[in-house]
Image (cartoon, rainbow, N blue to C red; front, side, top):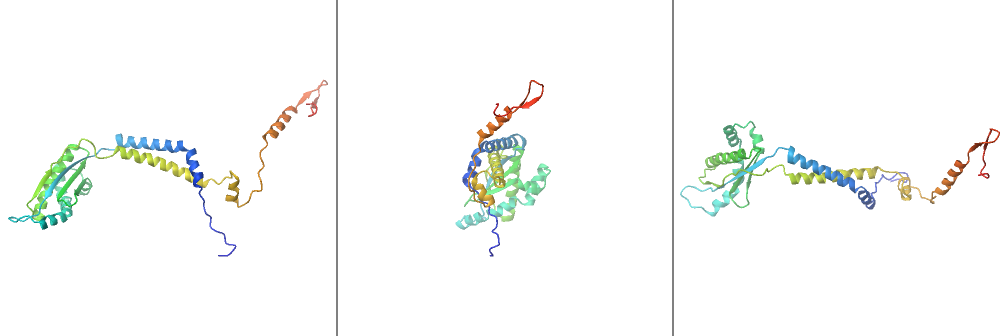
Length: 260
């Protein structure tokens, strides 16, 4: 690098000064967070559609006819729970449920409303279905469970698919989560307002203190000249007292400072 080559500009951030900016504008952070939090609460509680989720579960045991259940059977069944989940969410199973209830949705859209989960080291498969109608969510979950049980029996050739829990009618909506939405709105408002404060702080290159002279102009300050407000006030007073008045002859004359 040559001596004439300039170093790239580096933006220095004084964390203490930035913290002071936040403290001086705390009311902006609080107001932005409050407004965004209230807006998110209103949207989640009164505007966004509510969805209810109903869950049913089955127990699948893969054993052959007239044979005893072994440890290998249990381990194999545990490993195949992912296969069961794919069968439950298969297009054939979903289309049968859609056709029975006359749903005006595609099987892909219906698949997005279904959650299939398995607990670790178990062969219990949970099937959850979301819908805006809590009663319909229960009926869809039960029907999907029945259809899936038939397909698992025919595909895997197992004769042990038992119902663990019937689907229930949910009382409270599963989504949207009002508390979560409110917290997200609150923190989003604080974060956005803080980002605006930081951007304005970085873009502000006005000279405020002597350190700013060295920072922005690369010059050293020799001294400071205080502002003499008293001298300005006295001059202002003299100007007020230096006024014209009429003399006895009707002419104008300017009073001198000595005369005042």
